[in-house]
Image (cartoon, rainbow over all chains, first blue to last red; front, side):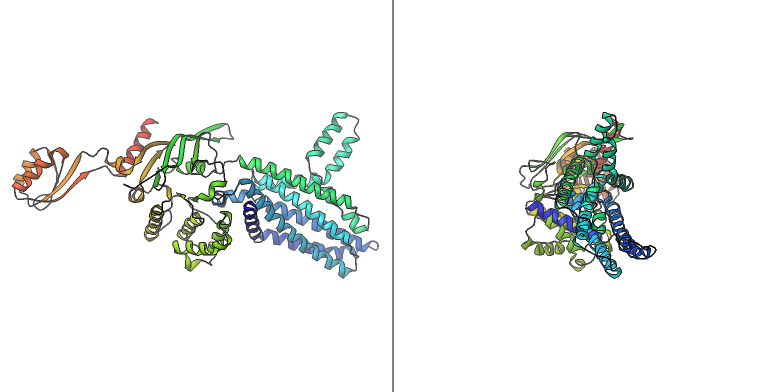
Length: 258
Length: 316
């Protein structure tokens, strides 16, 4: 119980700090402009106008919310150490694991909040353009929220031991790979060499699969999203985030805070 | 003599190496450091810049892992975190979230320290009053001066009423009034039975308030013990200041193995072995002189400190 109080204190403080980050507002502003620009772009087409508008909007939401998660997340731990604010925090009965979880939870909540704001902009633009909206759009946005939860954990991991610059490269790289890892796995399985198949399988089991959370196509084109897919994505997000945070804690607990 | 009890802080054979040059070489910053602080005392951990004071304190706070040796507080390994509700820590040049107010940051630390929600508001107000920041309670920390931030640092270290308090350069950035106030806070803590461990290189503060000290130079403990013992161990001489003494009488005293330091007539200063004091005083009184002062000549803590630094240089 005391642990939860401490994590909550750290998370709410991280949230208060994150919402003061000007980069967050710049990316959020760009995202909303891009969602709106989808309406203009859609007018260039004679067919599937609503689908183009919503494809553009969902892509903008995914890209910019990932950008916020990465660029705010990579400084999450590094900045605390550089500014030495961590010294007074860890001198209290706060374990390094609690500190990490608190920071991760605070930023995840921040990213979810901006996701909600982008989603509201998306709903408004769709409504004004007369594009259909359904529960599947909400599910797709919710799954994106899970993707961001994993992405913040990855950014937190790199922030534990490297500079924000390198951490942003690594996190962005993993995000890109995470959207391609399933294709790489399938490609590996088609290889004639067993070793290539095994390597592809091993990499796929370690690397994140962010396509698990990508149901944009289904939502925009009215295709069904099955309950088991949502359930699996949720379990996958919780499991992968948990594993990354455990790894982060193991690395961070060994680090000297000079 | 102040009653002191069990060992509250115990450091044994502590060694710390830092990896440098892409981790290939190692640099030893602490070598075989051992000392202990007792319950209810103000313990001064003294050393020049770069001696290893802050590194030692970071080991005690669990921020740095020792290469070898052990450190415990209240009998608990410093790697643990649960017992830290019994300790307070003020780092050197503390930095706090600039977007929070003094009240908010203290509330944040109180929550982290497990202060009951029903007590938090009162406790925050008490600490703001203690460090004289009640007028700035709702100002954002980004508007605070260095001295004000130092006071916030002291307040956060005490927010949960810990029994052992670690202060790294607590007087840093404070004006003379602020320094006196912090000294008074530290003395008040001792009066209530708390143990205070103080890192500093300001020897006048140490001499004024510390019970015991350890002097660390180049990562090794050079001296430790009660201040009175450290500065008094070599006291063999006395200084005698006399008035109304004729030149002949002064010469007679000089012949009696005292050293005339300065003056004549109304203010004559001698230095002599303490075994000669009785003889000198007899001469002074016989010649109609008046004794203005008689004081043992002890090395100051500064001299003890400088000797420790010089010894470290020689050992290198």
